[in-house]
Image (cartoon, rainbow, N blue to C red; front, side, top):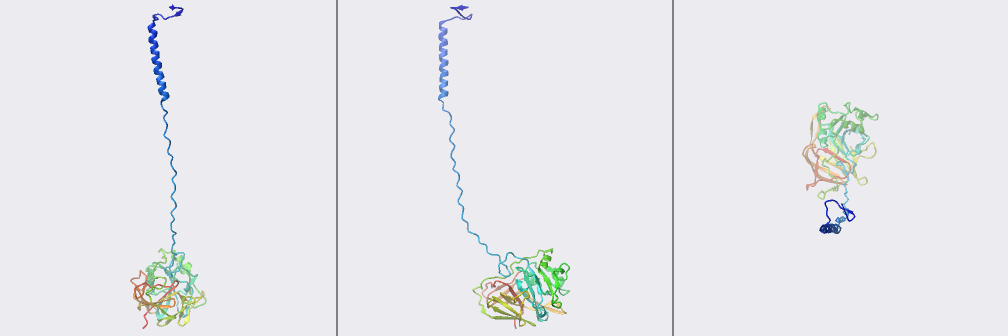
Length: 364
């Protein structure tokens, strides 16, 4: 139906109260909406807390460490500086008049002078710091050699022979056998033409060491055998000495101090001794070690060879720096070295350089 020119749906009346109610409702709705908008607008925006500034840690100042000074490596056989501790090679060397002058003796660290049959002597030269190209003349082994060698651990031992009954003892000993008669070692030896046999057998040290390293046994390097080096101890009372002698029944040694070369020069049977490589034989320290010399259990040329005891104790004279020092020596067993002590019990020291040890019976 139409009313007043406008269309009005059927069933609805236009009533003044209806308009009032609708107006009130509209006002309420508008108020609620307005409040919601105000609330939303006035609500604070959440603010993230500012990240804390982290300071970069300061590295600690480097700590100054004291410089480490390492003592130089020295040979236990000579007291002299060495680049490394070398293998131990011992060579038995002839000392009859027909074998002189010898070759390579001056290069040895230690020279042992040992008694042999006929009242004579023979050398055992021990090498580790230096190796001469050639050594000789090489001669045969004796019973005295084995206890001396034992202190070196498992050394290489070069020699030209031994009595048939003694050879098996060498083969069973704690050493590397470089017997000239063995096929494995024969290449290291050769005969010289300038002398008659048996005083003309020489060994090439490099070949000997190569053969020794090829052994099933480990070759020992130089280690402590009881020697001490340095200034003479305060308790030692040295006697100024220009020369000193040591004797065997059919051989003699004289050691003369040379202030110029700082060595004791060696004369044998009254004749100055020399090395074919140049220069006189001589050593910084000479030890005259008095010991028991008895008959060996093994024959040499049909009679017992002398056997000098290197295990035990006794007296000795140490020659160094132009003085002679009376000392005591002690070696409890063959597996250890020898200790030399003063009367006050201090260890006797040697001068730096080659050492000779002369095993002989006490003078009568």
